[in-house]
Every structure is written in structure tokens, then in C-alpha cells.
Image (cartoon, rainbow, N blue to C red):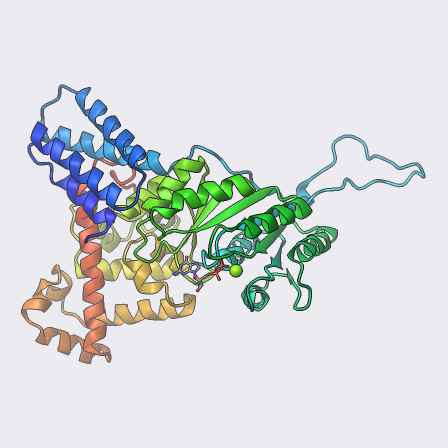
Length: 465
Ligand code: GDP
Ligand code: MG
């Protein structure tokens, strides 16, 4: 069965003449795809009605207009599904908190420094959801933005929990607190938070234990820890690939912990994500980040529109543009050409070569890669250095191609497989590696033609690169 994104995209591009019959069948396909991806039936029904109502409103019978309108309506409705319209609170740096007015003095005439509070974040969620991993990712995210962050391991349930957090924290050079001997998670949480508060840390993140089920003892422990550390933000970590169970799980946790935001993990795999969409809707709680891999950098701020674009296999074009804009590539002819091709729905091997060369100039490659579907799967198993050497390898391979090959869409290699052997020899690599480059280019090429299909979309339309 094709994934949700592919099915939605196929449904959208199935409309040709814009006849009522075609529209009805498109809506049916969308509804089926969403239901089979575990999106709550009530939400799907609402989306279906919204689409129908909006289509009715127009008298325009021009097929291409109808098609564009449909795409826009469906895109907006899908965004609406994942958008909670809630902004989670933002941590502040303590050193920025300035006292207003004249300094206050105590009875013996000494200045009182205003007692500023660290921003305490508590993590909740079932075992295996990705709490410990996401804790470090979040700590790293804030650390890179200049915050001081401390991690507290209040998981005494799972053997090795403290070691896991410790290893992650050491790797990312983030201060941590935990205990091998103390068995009381509430005590550890309180003690850890107190220590980091004394040292005026901006943010303190408390990792808790999860059990296999939503059991009462887990919820009791959660409430006790929460009372001990009084978090300003409680985050529920949820495995993005869980299906129907997502909604009831989220509701149970919401009642026990009143979490204020969600981190969805494992969105790199074949996550159906539909269950998670329902969880967001049921709890009216925003997703703030998504986890896209096991590594610390596989972590993205959640944005409804870019999430849906990725789901549809179009990639976060806007995010990519923002990066490229900073690079001053406007005068680069080959870059211009490849953007033109992209707008036309084409993507040749030469375009691929150009883009790979650009990537090397772009800095954090794993971030860039995450904006492109397929590319992230391809690169996200490895670290930054390895990513860049992989990309260099790909460039060597394309450097060994002839002009004719580079300007082709790649099918020339399928028709004449000996070319692969020749390129491999030239680049000093294996045929498999050449085939991987070709496969990647095909993926980009289909992304280009998808983008062309969704051209009316405001996120994709006329990139100003
Ligand atoms: P916890 O029990 O909730 O603390 O979950 P962990 O943080 O220990 O994660 C459980 C497993 O999921 C580990 O093997 C992690 O490496 C893995 N994991 C966590 N987040 C992600 C993610 O975003 N993508 C992938 N592929 N794996 C993840
Ligand atoms: Mg854990």
C-alpha cells in the first residue's frame, strides 16, 4: 500500500477535466487514504464537508482553475488538521531578565538580586516513545541558541536509563544530573532541578520514565514529579508511527499531566502519522518539534505547512529557499538554469550536480537534507562529516559523466547499463554507488514534477531564488 502522502498526491493529480464525477472520486480517495492512515473519522468527515462546501462556492468551470482551486483547498484543509493554532510558551534567558525601576534593598541595605526562575520542562510519554532521545535533542536545540540547559534523569524504572541519558548528554556536552543508587524518581527530580536552579540555568529538562501501558502507577509518579518540580511546560513525546491508539493515549496523558505541547518522533520511518494528527486534534495541543532520526540533529521545528508539503512528497521548498537565499547564488548561471528546470518539473543529473555543489556551501547538511524527502533517508544515518564526504563522492561520480549523460534525465543509464560501469571506473567507486546517485536524482526529479503539479500552492509557487 502506498503511503498517505503518495495517495493524497495521486488523488489530487487525478482531476483532469474538473467534472463533478472526478471531484467526487478525488474526495473519496482522499477520505479513504486519511481513514486508512488512522486519522479520526470525525476529523475526516469535517475535512470532506469543508472541501465540498468550498468547491460549491465557485462558478468557474475552467478545468485548470478547478484543479488549482482543489489543490489549494485540500492543502489548506490538511494544514488545518495538524494546526492547533496554539503557541507554546517560549523559554527566556535568565541573564536577560532585568529588574525594572531602582534596585530593591533588603533591611540591612544590601541589594536584592531579583530571584529569576529557571524554565523547567518535564517530559512524559510511554516507554520507547523517544523521551530520552528527544530530551537531549531539545537541550541541544536550546544550547545552540545560547541557552544554558541542564538535563535531569528521573527515570529509575528502566535499567540503564541514567546511563543512556548520561551518554547522550556527554556527547552533546550538556550538564546532567542523575543517580545510580537513589530509587525515588521524585527525590531525584527535585534534587536535580534544585541544583540547576541554584546555578541559574536558563532551562532544566526533566526526563521521566515511561511504562508499556497507560498504567495508574505511571500517572501517579508523573503527578508527583510534576508537583515536586512545578514545570512551566510539560511535553508529551509520542511515537509518530502509532495508529489508532494515539488519540486515547494522548487524552489519558492530557488528563494526568495536562501537557502543553507534543514532540512527534520517528517521523523518518514509514510513519503513518495519521494517529498523531488525531491526537493533536483531540487534545488541542500543538506539536512543537518532530524527531526524524536517532541522531541529535535529527530534530525539526514543526510547521503545519511544511509538514504537509513533506507528507505530499514535495519537500520543504520554502525552507530550502530561505537557506539558498543566504548564499548569494543569484549570479550563478548553472544554479539559475537548475531552478528554471525545477519550475518546469524537470531535474537532470546536471541539476543534481549543481545542487550538490551548492549543498556543500550551505552548511549544516543534515538540516538541508531534512527538507527534501528521500534525501533525508539517504543521509540521516550518518553524521555531518560523513554526510559531506558522501556528497563529495556523489559529485565525483557526476564529474565522471559525459555532458550528454549529465543533461539527460538519467534513463540513458537504464537503456545502456555499461555507462554505469564506465562512470564507476572513472570515479573509482562501485557500480552500486553510481546507481545510488541515479536513484537519488530520480527521486528529486519526481519531486520536481510533484511540485509542478502543485504549482498553484503558495508555498511552492514562483520561488524567488
Ligand atoms: P524513551 O523510552 O521514551 O526514553 O525512548 P528512547 O529515547 O529511549 O527511544 C527509544 C528508541 O527510539 C531508541 O532506540 C531511539 O534511538 C529511537 N528513537 C527516538 N527518536 C527517534 C526518531 O525520531 N527516529 C528514529 N528513527 N528513532 C528514534
Ligand atoms: Mg527513556
